[in-house]
Length: 325
Image (cartoon, rainbow, N blue to C red; front, side, top):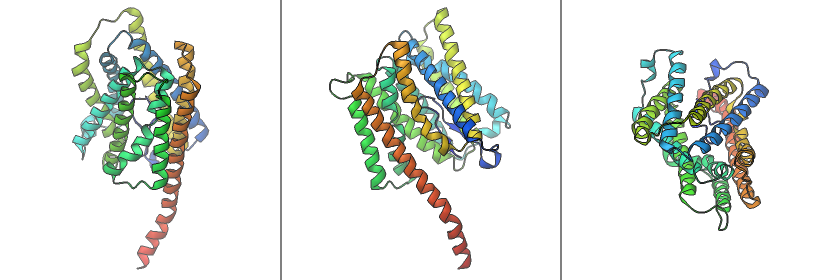
C-alpha cells in the first residue's frame, strides 16, 4: 500500500489504491487535484483557527471526527462488509494509530489558538523528517549519514523559526512540535500495518477509533454553538470530506512519488491565508527557517525515491540469479 499525506494537517492518511486497481495514470490531473485538496485543507485550518478562539480544541476535534467517521464508514461499506474491514492482524497497532492521530489533532488545534497559521504550517512540516527517524525502531529501517544530516538540517530550520525574538516560546509551539511527532509515529505505524492489513481496515479503525475517543473526551468540553459558529463547523466538515475525496481521486490517477513533493505547497498557501484572514505576515527569518525545512524534506524524499528505484531495478536481477543457483 502506498501512503500519502495530503497536507500537514489533513488529519487522515490517504492511501492509494492497489496498483492493479489504479485507473490509467494521468499525472497532470492527479497533481491538479492534490493541489486543490491542499488549498481546501488550508481553508479548513484557517476556519479551525477562528473556531478555537471561542471553543475547546477537544470539541472541534470531536466534530471533525464525526464527519470523517461517517465518510470512512460509507466509503468502506461500498467496498465490502464492514465486519470484514475490522479484521486486522495487528488490531492493537491499529488502535494505537487511531489514538496517535487523535492526539495529533488535539495538539494541532491547541497550537492554532496561539501560533500564527503560517509559522504553524512551517513547524509541522518537520513531520516527514521525524518519520525518517522513528522508522528506525518501528520499521527497522537504516538511516545513512546523508539522510541523518538532512534531518538535522531540517530541525535547525525549526529552531530558526522559534529563535529568540521570533515566535514566543509558549505551549503553542510545544503543541505544534508534539503534533508533528505524533503524526510521524502514526505514519510509521501506518506503513507497518499496511504490510498485512488492507486500506479499508486501516481507514475504518482510524474513523471509528477516532470517533469514540474524541467523543468520549470532547463531550465534557461541549459549548453551545451560535449560528455563525455552527456554519463554520459545517464548512469544516464539508471541506474535510471534499478534500479527502479529491486526494483519493488524485491518488488513483498518479503515483504517490509524483504527488508527495507538492505537500510543501501548504506553506506558501498558509502564508497567504495567514495574511489575508488574520492580517499576519510571516517574518523573513521565519520564512528562511521554513524554506530550510522544506529543502531538507525534499532532499530526503528524493534520496528515498532514488534508493527505491534502484532497489526495484535490482530485484529482477537478484531473482534471476537466485533461480540459477
